[in-house]
Length: 190
Image (tube, rainbow, N blue to C red):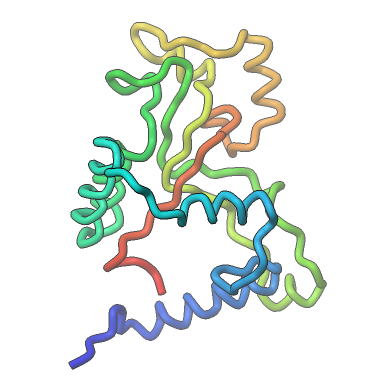
């Protein structure tokens, strides 16, 4: 007997609408589009078979992934995060000057413009990007709220300039350079 992964009709309709909205903005996922040369070369490298056993760290990721695949999204994220991401200074053993934040709001200015007027009229604007995890540089505000204070990677003047040109809404972090969006295999979206 086949049991659908997600029997909710509302959720299915929402997923279909989301796919159509993204397609309207020329954002395609898993459509067999030709990748840019640099990305295609990287993917080929990843697909090559390895003649050796994975490193202990890679094996830990493989093992954790198996356990995470049967969990809900939040539990799976917490299971995998420590193996894939690196911790900011606010965590024991974290990297100085770096911060790890959950669910930060990135500014909408970097979203693509609708390619046609009808796309915006039909589908509206894209939602504000909000990655599940975001790694960037510590702000002066965050650094000084800790006791003892965390290392500030920028001078106060540089921090002020970073606030002016930030890409994170309300400046939770400066210059995010790694973001992650997590989906569980069982509880993921259609």
